[in-house]
Image (cartoon, rainbow over all chains, first blue to last red; front, side, top):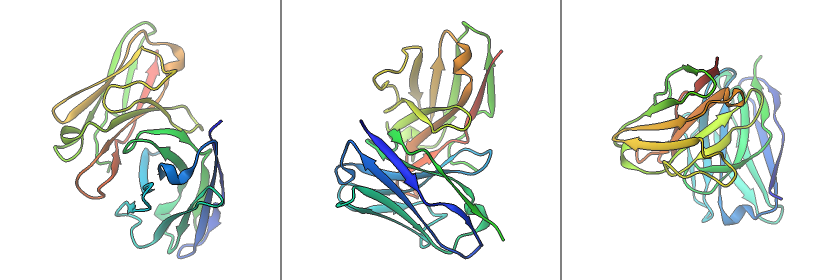
Length: 117
Length: 112
C-alpha cells in the first residue's frame, strides 16, 4: 500500500527555518517525480517544488533561493528545507507522488506551517 | 493571483450536469496536454479525478469527464450527487516560469 507520512512544520518566526519530511512506503521515491504543494488558508493550491527521478529539481519563483527539495534514497524520504521564511509562506504543505507533470496520485496528510512573530 | 483562471463558484441540483472551466495560455493549457483536475473536501488532501486532459484514474466515477479546447480546459460532472460538493482545482504543465506546474484558484461546487 502506498503511503506518504509527513512530519515537521509548526510555528516559526519570520526569517526562520524549518524542515519538512515525507516518509514514503509502498514505492521508491527515487523512481518517480516527487513534489511539494502548498495551500494557504482559504486559498487554492500552489505548486512549490519538484524533484525528478533523475535528481533534477525545479522551484516556484516565490520560493526559489529560499527552499531546497531533496531526498534520502536510503530512508525513502523526501524533504523540504525552508529558509528565510516569510509570513506569506503560511500554508498547509503537502508532499505528493507526481506520476506525470502535475498528475498526483498520492498525497501526504498535510502539515501546517505558520510563519508569525 | 493564480496562473490559471477558474470561476470562484458553481452550483447545480442533484441529477444535473455542470461544467467548470480552467483558462490559461498557449504556454500551459493551450500548449500541453498535462492538464489535471482535483477534488478536495474540507480539511482533506486533494484527490486526482482527471489527468492528461481527459483520463480518469482507476476508481474514479465515469460521471467525471475532462476536455480541452484552445487555452481552456473543462471538467464536467454529470448526474450531480450531494457528495460532489467540494472544491475543484485544475493544474497544467507550463513551458514558461516555473517550468513545471501551475494551478487554478479553485472552484467551490455547491449541490443545491
